[in-house]
Length: 166
Image (cartoon, rainbow, N blue to C red; front, side):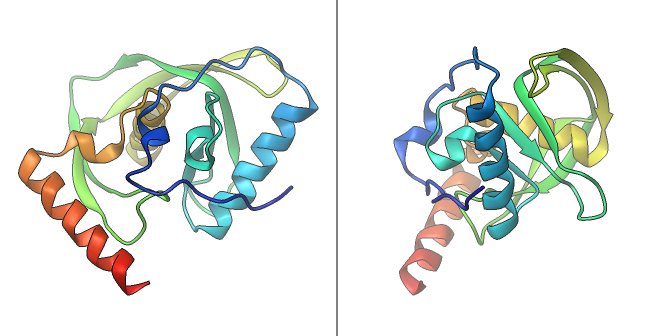
């Protein structure tokens, strides 16, 4: 278990499509542990393999400290509701900036567990938003791509100003 270096925007690895996990072993469990440690240190509520430069389809979510972390391997959205919701989003790869994004209110996600078992869940609210956000990341869609061009340009400019101050 280790805190890994987070890939920062505009690193091109954030726009690469992650490869499906084929081997469910101790290495995968170690990756999930490292993702959790890195997410907590960031801090954040969701992280993927690509956020630490590992092009594997692994997501770790922990929406609050009062609930256990959840690991999703090879997740995909099977269904999304027509109803929409607006939610403030950001990224561990672009700390300090957030913006409101429109997403489906509810989703059904299929995935594999760390042991390789098939599973699925339906989610709404923050969990549904997080699933969509992190699966976008696995598909090479960085969250700001969901913004209008004007909002995207503003947020990138704001992020660059913050980075110069660090």
